[in-house]
Length: 456
Ligand SMILES: *Cc1c(COP(=O)(O)O)cnc(C)c1O
Image (cartoon, rainbow, N blue to C red; front, side):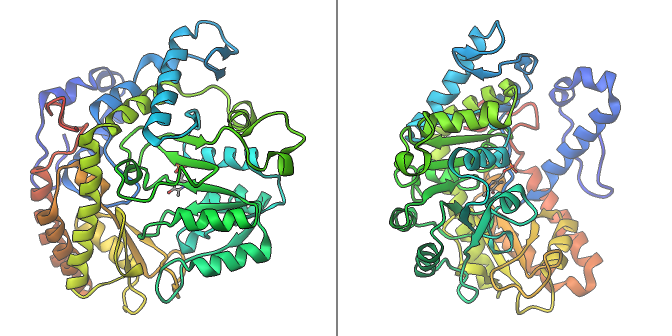
């Protein structure tokens, strides 16, 4: 097992090697890299807002023999024989998704969040039509109409974003833009926006201009499940999501929707399929071939885990930790975009600092605090430099960290920031302290002797 020079070693538990016993023999190169990544994940603070730790059970399903089966089609209507067991797996995943989110329809086949969003476009709009969404530099996702992505090339993006002064969405401005451009579809969702989203107001706007409203809850799904973020399902035609972020599932996408299309006659009169059917057909055969059944099984496991009181407690702690981290940073003189957080995420705003987001993020990484540089609203720096650092608490909360640890993290971030001009000494000390704290909080799914209920 690799070590980090003078850093404390990660415990070498017998089960950890057993778990990869075959790989260790047949492909030591890949085996070693997995072990090195495991070491990193046990000794660094994963503050990347979109990352998390899946449980042992999710990992077991995801690494299972279900990867061997071809299941093109949907339960009861496959293009290959021998799918009676697979049909059960997918039916369970669909049922659990619908129950967890209170949705009428679920499709669990998208390979990841981006393909899920691609299917949403295919089901709802035609190339060349107008779609409202947030540009990447303002906190939106690539698939919400960014120019280098299919979504910006094949569709016309009507951009909206947070006010550069306040960092908050201005719903009057969004309404104004929607009235002026009359988009066919409106995305509500973000990769970098720390505040709660007001789906009810978005729904009023969408209804007024007869646009489809689509929520992308890839980041915040767990907060929605726990009831600590507004629920998009009652307000939206479609909701897309990922499995691997706050939800702690496998790397996957899924789509929730209504069954009937309220604009069927107006926009899809020529189609004999309702909204649910159009989503399904857009995923398969529209975009994908065989579904990844091992991933769908793991998604079903994650939905079961997320339906427990333990998970709701976890999601509330994620939010409480983000608030504590925000308060700790504000108290140490940092500015935060939007003034703070309602979610799992915060954005340090360095527009008035001589130091860029990239400088701080790279220094933090050397100190074992892994995050990413990010544009902030009103940013004057370039996309590869930026004036922001994005932080998120899902992963450290999965390690079991709470408010006292968040305050220590805020203090380390301040130390690294203040030491940016004499980096090597600063980061060495912080790196050591980070490792020591991390070793007290082994993450789920990595150290083999975790009790089976360690993640619940
Ligand atoms: C992460 C994310 C996605 C895409 O997920 P991938 O699995 O990386 O393709 C889509 N939308 C939002 C808002 C996201 O944050």
